[in-house]
Amino acid sequence: MKIVRYTMLMLSTIFVLSGCTAGGAKFMSVESAPTNKALVYFYRPNAFQGSALSITVKDNDKAIFNIKNGQYISYLAEPGLHKFYTDTMAIDKPTELTLEAGKTYFLKTSLRVGMWTGTWGLNRVYEDEALAELKSCSSGKK
Image (cartoon, rainbow, N blue to C red; front, top):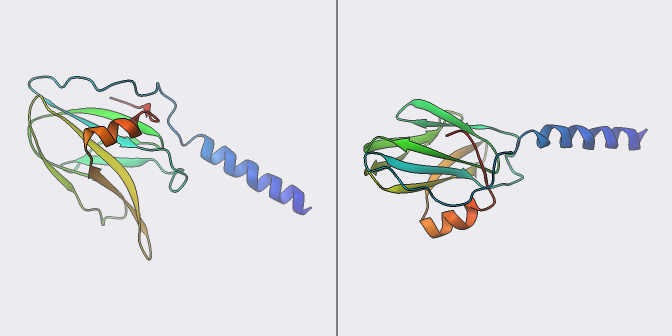
């Protein structure tokens, strides 16, 4: 009986987690930003912790997309000040960036584990670090 329960628990866990990772094409290279817009790459490296959650990313209080475990999304934005943040537990701290037309930016999602709850954050990273991590990510909605 214990074996049946254990098997059912494992199968349920695999079933739940299997639908929570990105399934698009693997990242190949950085696109050029158009001269009148800024290009922002949001990415979420594949990790077990928090893998079952799809994270909503907002730009100046407007939801722009959901990002899954192991996924990246490129986003064209107007130049100017932007406050990017995730929509988790109403305790998120925005990442403020003044975007310039024709430039490319990289923001990585990361889970911040607290004493009572966890929250997702967005951290700006250098291109070299982002490119190394993006290689393991699959594309999402543009």
